[in-house]
Image 1: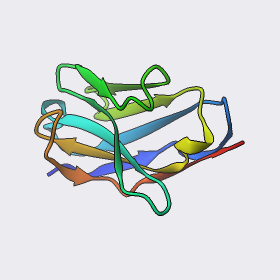
Image 2: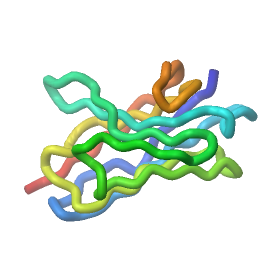
Image 3: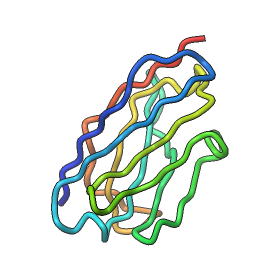
Amino acid sequence: QVQLVESGGGLVQAGGSLRLSCAASGRTFSSYAMGWFRQAPGKEREFVATISWSRNTYYADSVKGRFTISRDNAKNTVYLQMNSLKPEDTAVYYCAAGTTMQGPFGSWGQGTQVTVSS
C-alpha cells in the first residue's frame, strides 16, 4: 500500500482557485492510477478526477473544464488544480491510489477541506 497526505485546502471566494496536492510514500507511486474524490456534508463521496500512470485523465462532468489533475512521478505527488470554484464545490477532498483509473482504490488520504464562499 501507499501512504497519502493531502494539502492545499482552504477558504476561497466563488470564482477563485486552489491547488490541492497529495504526497505519496513508497517507491511504486508511478505505477498507480491516482484519483481525487470529494464528500460534502450529508452527501455521498463522489468521484472528481483520475489520472493513469501514463497520464491519461478523466473527469466528472461537474468539474470538467474547471479542474485539472496532474502528477509528478519524480516528486511522488498528484495535484488537483481547481479554477472557477463554485459554492457547490465545498467538500472534503480525498486523494486515492488504485490499480486502474476505474479502481479499485485501496489507499486513501485523510482529506483536506475546501470551502467556497458565495
